[in-house]
Length: 154
Ligand SMILES: [Ca+2]
Image (cartoon, rainbow, N blue to C red; front, side):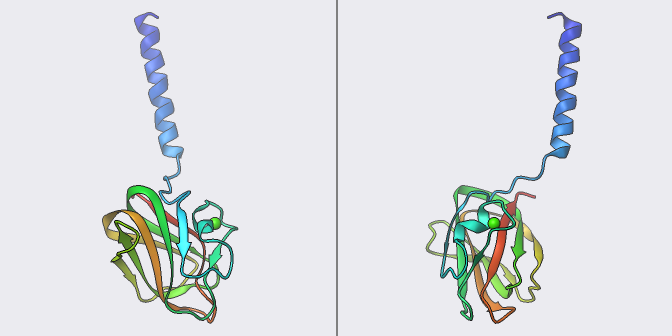
């Protein structure tokens, strides 16, 4: 390949890279995580991390507290937590991290949750392998019901 063709090729690769980077959706770091929960009235805990907005997990009705934990496989760093609620939402809850999946540390507290789509930007990035939603007060008589929990680096 001569020099001119090489430059044209490099330019083309760079342009494709730019277009691709702009179009790419942010990576959901929770996708495919393994879920466990205090109870499951509807669906399975894994359903909150399957990337589908029509599959959900719901805890047993009328139980506080209730929780769902995700094992991300390896430690991941995120600054945004997105909760896709079904109609049964949590009005008060903690978000927690853990190094071993047993001992939990609160990094965010919600006291006025309103359900629907909650897009939470943390004050500082959190790095953890285990993530837990810990529901303290339900917004309805039912349980806590989530279509998806998503985590993003930014
Ligand atoms: Ca889902």
